[in-house]
Image (cartoon, rainbow, N blue to C red; front, side, top):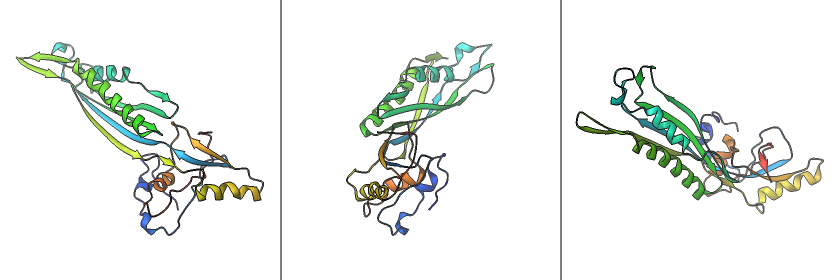
Length: 226
């Protein structure tokens, strides 16, 4: 089975109709380093923030505007990003906004992600990133013609894929680890690091119905860590 659109959100795996599968277990063959069995992968959330400011002429009346790019910059600067801990990572990867150099921009969009093997840490990281932008927006207010205007942030946090955690004692793991003993191929069970991303087929397997076991992932990858 081959799934599509992995890099844009695991769309193929997410729309896979697993009710048509008759197998009770499966393997995902991927990457370029044979001999590794990956049994864990982090959950990931996609984050999108829209920062609203107030447009004004940058040369004639900048004091009548709220610069959404400035608000976004202050928020991102306050975020903990990159390697958060051994099991958690976070990133802001896309920023877009503004239209002309002589206009105070009133809209900025940011897109990012957070990943973790720990659901509580993933939730905490996403909340932190949201609060960092909201706190920055709260510092930008002005009174215009007797009316108070504030910067504000719209936040959307969506699950990209769930974590995968296949026990070492699972039959599929034992089967794969036993197979190389009858061949020249070594086998090493590995865990995906927080900055690694399961393949599209992996994500589908980890969300399989409870009627069948989760699929272990026989995915040779340099991203794994013991």
